[in-house]
Image 1 (cartoon, rainbow, N blue to C red):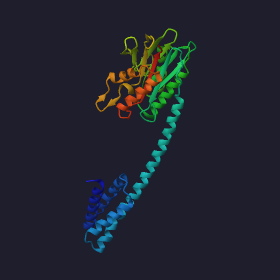
Image 2: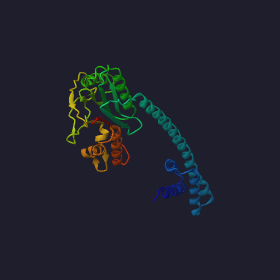
Image 3: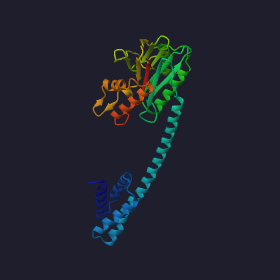
Image 4: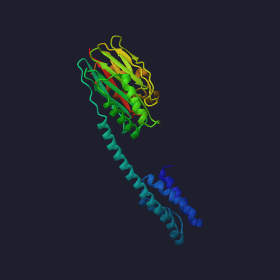
Length: 335
């Protein structure tokens, strides 16, 4: 039985019961039915037509015909009130949607960053929000010695609060001295900012690394953020980057250990958010190989083309519906 058949049956029952004993409690059932009619986009003219059809099917006296209009009047009055309320909610939703679109546009402007250009290495980056507001954040900075700082962070949460937290992190980073690109020190400073300014119910993970173009090394520290992968070009294999550290804002005086790896020609550092490693299909979370295989598939492409192609493949696996913010960064030393 489809919805219209259900409506016809219920409306017929309401008229029958009302004509039987004139119980006004029956009219309340007509009010409830009105809201369902609006939800299923059934118009007033269809209700009037249904009322007419039902009355023509039976043998009713003139008085019963007049009394039946009590039901129709009650249903139509309730319909009008519900429709006005429905339109008011739609107007509020549209206003909220417009405000969120403006906020999302502002967020993109506030968090904008430029990918550094290097002579013997390259960086590719992509960040796609699951909703309008992005709870992921990445940022690049270069000091006077041409060392490149790479930050990637994730707010455990979504929406406007997460976006505001990311904006705060960005401006806190902008206030740091570029000649002090030391991963552990950077995270210590940001940890104090978060501890003082972010609600305790929100958590921020972050990984910050520095690529030394003279020494070809990548030093990094992590604050509860999954460090990612390292690709060894000589052995053609991936391994997970080690790294532990407390989330930002948990304890004021947290120290963050620094790790270091050397990059040979063709080697890559892959940094990501949990929206990448926790991609879900109907069969559950993807296996590690489902992430590294597409990277290896496009290994000979420029870094930016690698991240774009990997995103497209993982998006396809999820049937083009992201369940979490997706951020992927690849640092690739040229051959």
